Length: 253
Image (cartoon, rainbow, N blue to C red; front, side, top):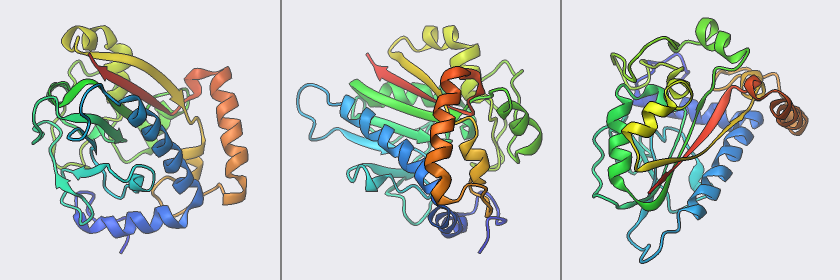
């Protein structure tokens, strides 16, 4: 099985898992993200009875974040064998104010109607709950990688937060997170006053690209990952717009 399978096929799961497990740089990068999940999960301890408040990951796919947060619920719009629940982010099957936390990594840019998704996030999160979005940031070099070298679409000139969808993964706009939270931040704040933008943090200038992502190759052997991480962290402090990714943390008022 290879990653050349139909992007929207549930059968890609084993191929993606194998790639992540074989490539220490990619696995370590995801573990770093999942530790951020844990930090936000702890922030989301709301007052009162938490026993019925659950945490979910949208677009889990081959996620292994349960290694860090065992109680998290895996969800995806594609019926992968490992998901706990098939969920469309624009029509979530959860009760009002029932979620403690929502997480997504490289998922927002695949949601064809982001406004509908944020309405659902606002509806489902209980007050004090958080949503962590990890997605692509069009930094100095990342913009050109996304625009000309990546298989996913990139369009930072569109006015709307939506795009035609032909499939959950085969359709995308990798500029979407930047459009919503950088270019159109004021618009977001006006549309969703109940969702406070707690912070936006840029990161990962080069490590993800040099790791090869979910492709079979990598330019970062495991022994060099700590060095690559240190370089990335120092670079993004000096030049924030060298980042290729950003974390957006929203808090339900």
